[in-house]
Image (cartoon, rainbow, N blue to C red; front, side):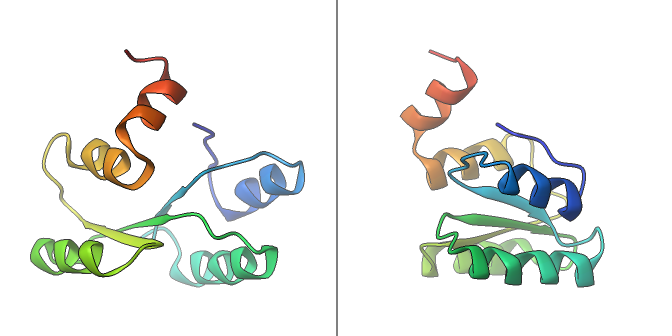
Length: 104
């Protein structure tokens, strides 16, 4: 897991060649900045999954959106305890997540 405190920080990490399998993006932060960052991901050719977090997503709509895409997933705020981890496991695969965090 690589943390970035905003789009500028994430851009720098990607420019340095940090390899990521997926991204978690907070749409509530600054929608314009996040939108621009998503466009730059397309320009970079990033095809990995993107998990979009927002208080604007209704939980039932988020679940439907999750099932309809292979690259974009949504999670509405507030989410239940463990729901983000479960979504990460679904998107990246349980064995991949356990491997990257050092969990058995």
